[in-house]
Length: 378
Image (cartoon, rainbow, N blue to C red; front, top):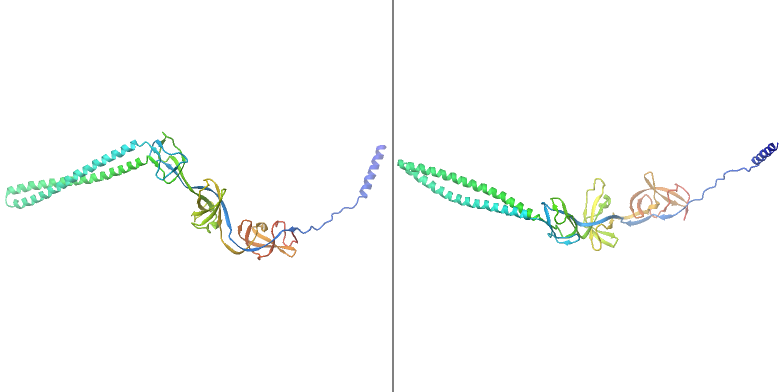
């Protein structure tokens, strides 16, 4: 009975609480207008400057190799050493190459002596043949008068034929020897070139960067032996867009910033046809190398098109939506969304078209605004 009593009292209390609860409802309150920052659409003259970063590189770099095979027997330089053009850097054993040159010279001299000998014989044979022709003519006239003269004429004619044959043989011998002489001369020229190729020469004034071989190493043609660089000036190699490249010219002065300082460079190369994969143009700027080193980062300031009397707004004032661009113009206490055309960006500003100069616009946090919305200026 006690349990039933307690249960009944609990039910009565719950029912009283339910029927006496206060009524609740949500009260909707109007949000206050957002506070915005504003700015003016400025009409100015401007020349955007594109900053492009790249690495400084030597103006010239050459990987040198021997054109003949052999064993290194002289290493005349070390890495970091400055050398003049045509200085001997490495040398391979040249004994065999000297022997080939001497052999070629001897064969050439032999052929020349043979030509000299046969040329003299040919000259003498030509004189004999001329005399014999005269004798044949004389005997021919006498042969008409007696039989003995006729016999002498036949013998003289036969001797003339022999001399003509010998003259032809000597002429052929001289011509053949001259052809062989040309071949031997070509062999000698090649042998002398190969002898010179036993020395690896510096192609320009520069600094030895890397040596890949040691004394006693055997090298083959095409095998990299040494690298030399020219660093009295440095090149900044960049890739730029077509719009940037169109405003640049060979020889143009360009400001270049490094970790050390700011200095003036000059454009020495500019590709007119873009790379088919990146659609960018190669650009090379040369600067003095004093207190700089290859591999160091540098920033080039590339001037773009000069714009006179154009509207500019802060980048933060532009709303990008569905591939279009807008700004919010402030009229009295509300904003109007206006579509604009983007021309070119420069640092934190953007050249635009579509609004009047000196118009008041919202300068930032525009993504939360709506067309016609009431705002409060900061």
